[in-house]
Image 1 (tube, rainbow, N blue to C red):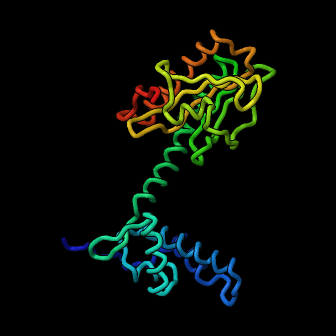
Image 2: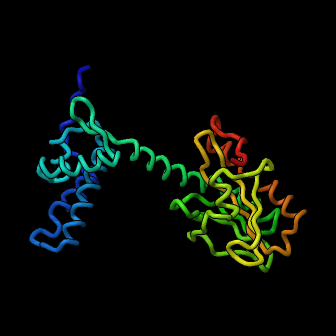
Length: 256
């Protein structure tokens, strides 16, 4: 197949600016920290160029970030080994599967917050307790990325950006697919004493995108009210999944 002609016009882009800045920054400095920083900047410049301009040749990559072909190739091989870039039979570079995955995750999570905000508000109003949206962070942690505060004077608040362990927590069980047939998980006094958390997964055919978690004092969330809140949380999580993944959502997230 004939390869399409490449445009000859010079493009002004953040990639080129960042690449040249990386190439020229700190010249003459022998500090190991400065050298490591330059290597990271150069590698990121190359990755950005490949994502923006693929398919792209080695010479084009080197020119885009102001590096010699030898240095560019060394960094590109490192990125290729990590699956951030790939190389076709003709030698041109393309974004790798990891670059696609991270981009999709970042875009999806940003969209998920927008879609989840109405659900969080409904839960906080209907249940009176604070409602959170959480996602998987490091392998042993979950992180809260959005919330709507409850309406009671005594309420859970201020945990956006904070992490919680996935081990034996409601949101951890939901994110890991360890959800009973009722569709939600109730855990008491795990992260905080006398606090109950009720979580449900936002599930699709590709896995679990995130989880909703309602948190409040245990004296208000007795067995009956926990069941009512749990059903509401599970319903809202399914609504978010249907909105985000209209043809790929699933209600089948049971204990495994």
